[in-house]
Length: 334
Ligand SMILES: [Zn+2]
Image (cartoon, rainbow, N blue to C red; front, top):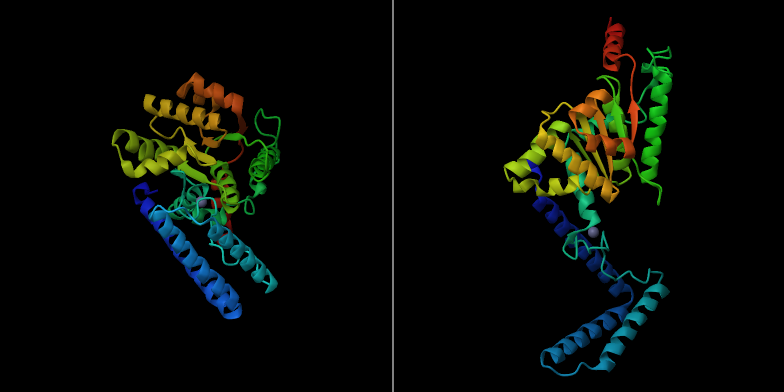
């Protein structure tokens, strides 16, 4: 993923376009209404000249004429009832905003608006190859038949029953995001490669992105090397928004944890992420190939105790699916 390519200026330009488009839309509405209800044109024109007179009075230090303000207010009322009488919504000539919260500026009191975070997600989503992957890796294409229904080693459940339960829990995890007031959780998937961990992660990412949630998907390598180390050690300012996003998106996915070069920096950053996001009530989804014993010794006790307390942990086991898929393809082509 090329984070250097993420240009915040592009997002701000999108806002300019939205504002321009909405302004044009309003102009068209006005022209249409003026044609149909000339009284409204007259009302708006007198309002404008009154407003100007008021402004000039203020500049010259004269008391604003209270009567003028009142008539302006009653003109607005008149305008609204005229619109309604002609079958228009009352606010038909009000300013149009895609996001009324920030009036399409992307900021509320100097802080980024939620719609800005949404645009950032869309952009990251677009830039990553996630979009293509998610076309064919989603809940509809998740195939439980790759998991054996025979007993597996010392496990209580067959790989099939286990995977089925993980799939159910993944659906529940997603549902909580779309249920107001529901408590959102954290997930950790572990197991050997080729058991569908990334696939499941993709299913969850797609569902949440499709329902308008902000999701940041990073492999452990991307997270620690391409973003955090670049940002902290090389002082790469262009990554500030991605960095902030790590701490503000609704779901942070860390895929393949354990494949990075684990050092004390990585461990301290991982703790920071798990701890801070936990304090903010923001969810994480971690996948790893490491067995839990190894995971605990590679990272530290502080990390492990938070994961044990706050994460739902699933182990995926069974035969390697990628291998089975390849076998299937070979069989079907010969
Ligand atoms: Zn907004």
